[in-house]
Length: 126
Image (spheres, rainbow, N blue to C red):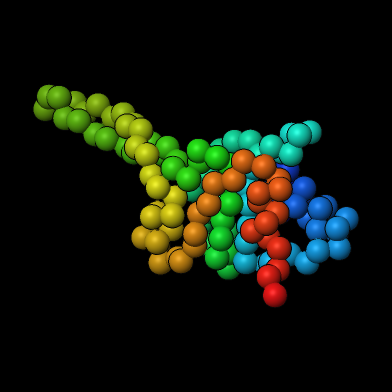
C-alpha cells in the first residue's frame, strides 16, 4: 500500500510519467514528501521502508537528502545492583545501504532533493 505523506514523491513520479508519457523503471523506488515546488522532504522509518523496497525487488532506493543514514534505538540493560537492572534505549546511526547489504540485499540508496532529480533515476534508458 502506498499512501500518506511518505508516498508524495512516488505519486509525483507516477503522475509525471503519465503526463509526459515516459515509461519508468520498476526496480527504482522512492520515499519522501513532496511540496508545491517539487522539493522532496523527510519521512520517518527509512530502514523499514528500505527493507520493504528491497523485498519488492528494488535495485535503487531513493530517499530524501540527508536520510541515507537512519537513527535507531538499541535496547541497553545495565545492572546497577543485585536484582536491579536499568533498561534504556541508546540512539545509533545506521547507514541504510550497509544495513540492506547486511541483510543480503544489493540495493543502492541514493539521496535526492527534487522531483526532477528523482525522475531522472526512474527514466527507462535505451
